[in-house]
Image: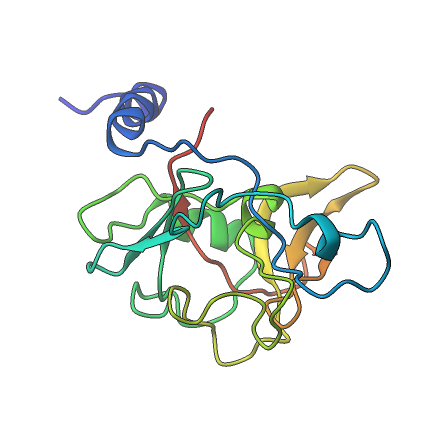
Length: 184
């Protein structure tokens, strides 16, 4: 007997809590240069505290973010997500993905997607040791977050520099980097 989607998702949430734990907080931006007193380079606030490693490579194509507790796919192309796609197709691709022994992947919200950005880097704006970019870093990555003022739009992130923007959910195509875990 197959459980209703609502019940399958509820059991996944319980599974997530037991698999992924974190003592982290908001991640550092990566800015170390001081451009003006009081900027982030002055304070360098955020996780990791005490030099704790932020990302853990599980060796199965997934990465754990110790700051957020989220599990990311290291290389979405290795998971079969090789091309850009429309927003609705990206949601379906994530929801139906079975990768590295997990079948509860989803499209990240915009805050989750921006949490992997390292503002001290560009092209791409994240650590290549843990995240393999798509060949085109100028094509954004979708988030599941709809833009309130423009309901046909959804928030995206340019991997090139971590810039947040809005693209049309109906007519634009972007890449997707699935995630699992988090709170619901």
